[in-house]
Amino acid sequence: MQISELCKESHRISKAHGFWDGDKCVPSKLMLVVSELGEAMEDDRIGSSKIGEELGDAMIRIADLAEYLGIDLDKEIVRKMKINETRPRLHGKRY
Image (cartoon, rainbow, N blue to C red):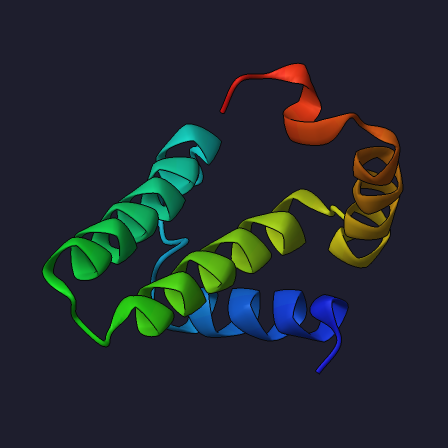
C-alpha cells in the first residue's frame, strides 16, 4: 500500500467511525498522534510486545489527518528525507 492509499483509507475509516463528527480541530487530532506515541513509549518501558500496534496507530492517525488537510505525504516524506540526507550528524545537536 502506498502512503497516499493509506491516507485515503485511514480517513475513510476514521470518518465512518465518527472520529470527524463535530471535532475538526487540528490540534486535538495532533494530540491523538501524541497519545499513541505515549502508549508506544509505555509499551517499550514495560517490555510489552504491543509497541508495533501503537506505532501503527500513530501512523494511521497521521495519515488520517494528512488526508483531511490535503497533504501529499508521499511527496513530503521524500522531500524531507532529501533534506535530512544533507544534515550533519545528529543535526548538530548533542543527542
